[in-house]
Image 1 (cartoon, rainbow, N blue to C red):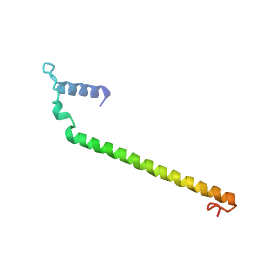
Image 2 (image 1 turned 45 degrees about the vertical axis):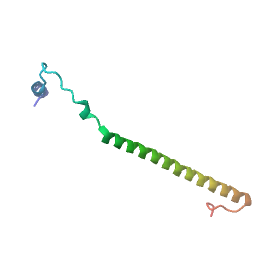
Image 3 (image 1 turned 60 degrees about the horizontal axis):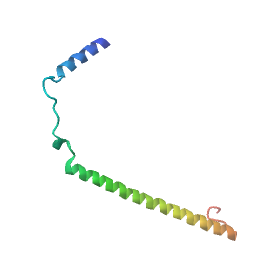
Image 4 (image 1 turned 60 degrees about the vertical axis):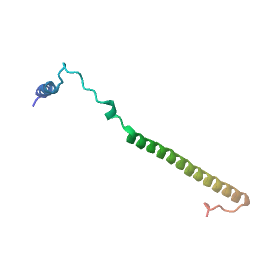
Length: 89
């Protein structure tokens, strides 16, 4: 099969499936193509879940930062006293 044969077949298929130009184009009913109440509820739940996950992530990152600051403070105090820190053992 050559390229010209494929183009000819595609052209004939397109001509067979083309809509009659004398007919008005069909537009779908806007009430049947909208997501409706269920779509709104699903999107609202996804949004609420995203906000809650962001708050939880922020809380966890803050906790990790506070723990690291506490470890650094303990290591600095141990270094002032001349004691080896936990990392040096």
